[in-house]
Length: 149
Ligand SMILES: *[C@@H]1O[C@H](CO)[C@@H](O)[C@H](O)[C@H]1NC(C)=O
Image 1 (cartoon, rainbow, N blue to C red):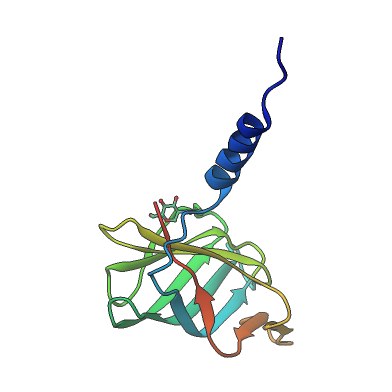
Image 2: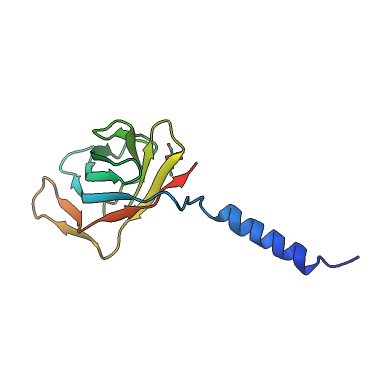
C-alpha cells in the first residue's frame, strides 16, 4: 500500500477549492445598486417588507429601478420584476430587514447576482411610527458582483 502522493492530494484539494468557489466572471462588472432602502410594515398581519433600489448594469448600459413587496408567506424564490422586466429580484431571506439576502437575475441569461445586505453601512432605525415601523437605508453604491449559473 502506498500513501497518496503529494500531487494527488494537492489536486484533490484544489479541485475542491475550485468547486466551492462561485463562478465569478471577471470581465463582467458588478451591478450597482443605489437608493437602496427597506421598510417594515408590521402593523397588521401578514407583515410585509418593501425593498426599493435603482439598478445599473454597466455591462449592458441599462438603468432601471426595482421595487418589491414581500410578505412572510411568500417563497424566497418568488421573483419580482424591475421596471425593465429583463431584470428580476428574489429574496432568499427577508424576514429581518436588517439582514437581507437578495438575488438579482437577468431573464434568459446565465447571469445572477446574490448578495447580503447588513453591517455598518446598512443603517436601520425604528421610526416610532407604526407604518412603517422600521426603515433601513444604504448610503452610496452597493456593488453586487455577477456570477454565472
Ligand atoms: C438566483 O437566481 C438565479 C437565476 O434565476 C437562480 O438560478 C438561483 O437559484 C437564485 N439563487 C437564490 C439563492 O435564490
